Image 1 (tube, rainbow, N blue to C red):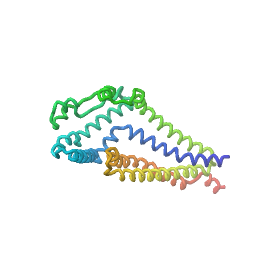
Image 2 (cartoon, helix red, strand yellow):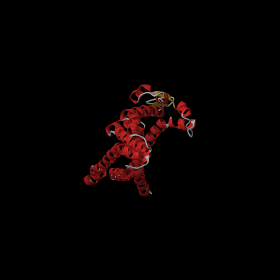
Image 3 (tube, one colour):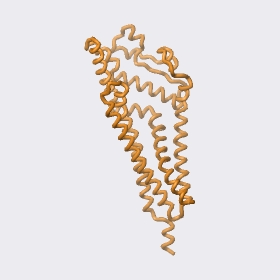
Image 4 (cartoon, rainbow, N blue to C red):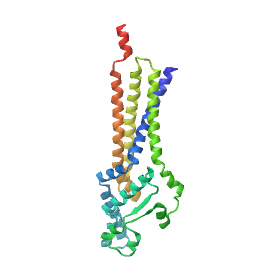
Length: 275
């Protein structure tokens, strides 16, 4: 019975460690504005998006019989700087709300619709930024399909993420403790070493497969006629690169620790030799 229980615990340790890594991704990366801002800045994402959108805009205007010179004014509305300000202001607001540090989401637009209608020059639009609550934003632009309950769910993400971290780490600790208690004195460290080694290998394999699959998809999206898929091709690679750093670190650490446990002198062996 003990042998079967130990096998089950060894098998369980693998998905639980994967959950631990995923919970850290969610808590320390997905719900951190520094992660998103830093990732996009380092990868020069705003310039790439601006170039991609401006190119598409030029093609559409010319194809519709417009002049290329007309695109210059419109392109200034999607300059790297405006995209940067738009993204950073809104991601900060959303994550403050998600982490329970703000009572509402404030939507920021780098220029107001009124300023465009009044014919303000493109280079001056930055001085006509506008902020409003998400509720007011949805009403102003007549956006439907988003209700108050959906928005309130976002405010729980921060609490849920901490419960996810605590829960997954507690499960991992429980599995290791049970493994320790169910294993004889001379084999405890070896069994735990097997758990950590297998878990480390699986984390690295899962990371490799996920990285390969996502990169394959994003490479196919590059140059797509669809704006959404082309934006994914630009933004996904740097995000994945930063996420995988944690997976690689956990996988290698677990693998090394597991292997080291095999070489630690076992108390049971020492007692037998003395006898």
